[in-house]
Length: 379
Image 1: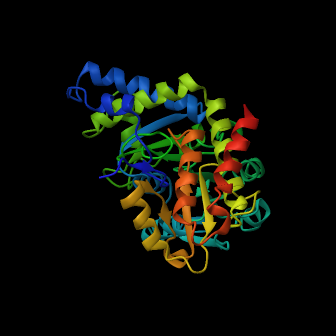
Image 2 (image 1 turned 60 degrees about the horizontal axis):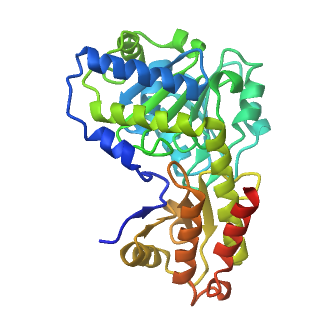
């Protein structure tokens, strides 16, 4: 098997330091040793999240973190506004409907971001929450979280819930500054860890709103928060993943959060410049594009599934295709977490080599040249 170069929107590459952290000898979760790990982990998460509230680590996927947040904060019949601009916006809508919330859905063309005015226009006196992705990873769009959060400060009774699973550690999100009440992340994206942990940030307002009763059993955030405030967990945690996430946050602190955000913006610009140089159409406008994923409209005569399979099997390069209505229409190249600018140049070079018979400019590697030029100019 070829060495894996993982440019998918999650999981992302796991650095050696984090792999080794997960290979340490197992400890018991009801121990002082684990209490110290959880205490340090939550403190570092609060710094990244930028909250005076709390961050809870859950043994689940990111979707579990979203469901836990909803079932712990909302009741049957509550009016919830959901932004659906892709596959994961649909998932938010489906979770709401599963619990019989009264859902108002804002449908946005896939690939585009919603406008803050469109969100505010849907608010009524009964609106309980606004639920949105920061980055809709199925399309590559980044929603105007900062603008929406600023405008929602005029509606203090509304919970602003953000799915930041592919945005945390990529974009500069700060709960207190940006007016975010619930911010959900997951371990396998920019956190550079294996899948299995969700991280849920709660503002002081959200904490006050947590339901004590009828909030589910395993997914009761009130119950889990009460335990984690004592540096333990309500149920058996993913011990090794907690150790790995703590190590990941140490790595992130060493680089510096501001430098991390700057690096991701650079890699976005490098990748977009490269595909433009190859005369490929980008799926998102400059204003709407995420810093962690570049989405490209596939050439009309390209068998996307077959091409991606060839890239993976022959070159060890893993990219992602489109989902649902975008299947065979786009391909997605993620550049988040441990990925560095030189990795981006190498991946673009491999893509060009595989498409030289389809794209005239690929044979002379105009894309990787453009990416490398932008990288050099940034230093």
